[in-house]
Image 1 (cartoon, rainbow, N blue to C red):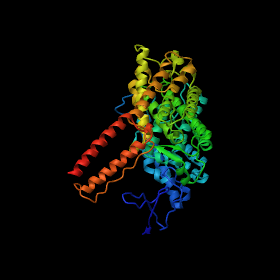
Image 2 (cartoon, helix red, strand yellow):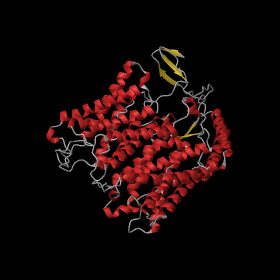
Image 3 (tube, rainbow, N blue to C red):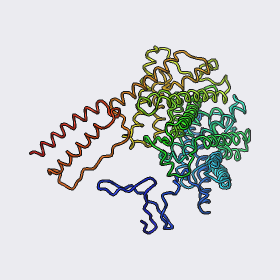
Image 4 (spheres, one colour):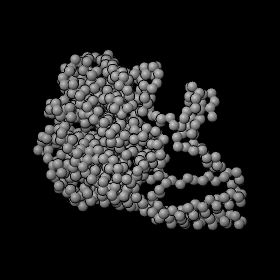
Length: 611
């Protein structure tokens, strides 16, 4: 039906149900040309919008959006790095402050222009979009020019509002060019290129996962997720290279300061990393079909974490999911341990370390949850077996992938950091870097219990997210998991290092040949996950799907005999359906409570009916 340019259509996959008591799901689309939109039209989100398909005016607005967005990013990010005024008094802003400033500046820019241009704000991300087929080369060229122009404008605005004698970070030499990314003197140029490539590769992989049409239902809070992704990368990489991730962000201050030392590193590294990440994603994980209806048919979801159902249980699907687990666990260990490095002139506080690990988990979930559910932890995989979400053969593939991924992630850390600087304290502690161990005053049993309790809480969060009855609380799942890990690390870290993940502990132990108390970090997390998932299944049950409530007709008076008959019929039907459910979907307490409750409700209604 169409009136006055407004077409009302059923969304893809929706069917009309005209029966009484059922509501119809419709989509409303505003169309300026008055044509009916086909349900076969390709689904789009602000992150997938191809502006080259629009008219010339839309293209110009998209380019202008990139100019404005990049200007906002550079202006806010660099302004937050000023340390020449109160309240810093010569100490300069902390790494945490600078990281959150740049990350949340990205969030602001995406929120402002994401619906206009896609808010790339970064030549490396634009090139990744070209590889994925989301941008043409010509449009990408205009985007890159716009981003560099925006960076020049952003830093120019900063110089306009700040006296020249105050343009410094407050902690070093005021004559050093302000807001310039540079390679730490303790590492080589090769280390710097590798660091920028790996950091930008993670960012580009995050973008690829977010652009994936299978991940469309996880597009809530996207601006915040991208901002926090940039934040965690800055927390991990600022000591190495200043963490540019973005050639335009480095180009703007370089032009204004006339500082070109190692400038080429900040083009080669980020663009190279983005190209590799985009090629990996397109080759291994990109959806095979371009028809969005096919994607919808092939997908299921557990509270915002989507998994492919097509070829479910086959060797190919399991291996692809295992490969995603490998890459996800590698990113987790790489970023988390990078945030612990204290050998490059910056000693991270405890809160910074826990935030880095937590936000690294968020990044990984956003990247691969729609492919493998992002367990990235053998303990979580064991819990999924108990809950009936994974078979033992699938779990074995996950275990192997997680262990290899953790080893690979720690290996990447050694590639970008000199051995004598890979330490959380003094140089003589380099062989213990990122290795979990108990507090000196803690007994082995106490350590075992605390690891078990911490992982049990984490597994309880996992169980609740996977529960279909909790679908209404499925927004921002990656952020919730990330903050869960962060708060657990903040609380439990001083006791045991808060592993909660045997793979995360195994890799540093293997690389450093340190096995003291290592068994605790297997038995504690796996035992805690087993107990938590078993208790959840036993007490609360694990339904396969959410049962739709049938509304009781409201056409009769509440005190009439007819309404009591209707209530009795509905309750009897529900009791029958409950009895017919498979035993594994009934929690023990739930089972007896419902029988008890239904019995007395029925007696009450019968009594009312008879009187």
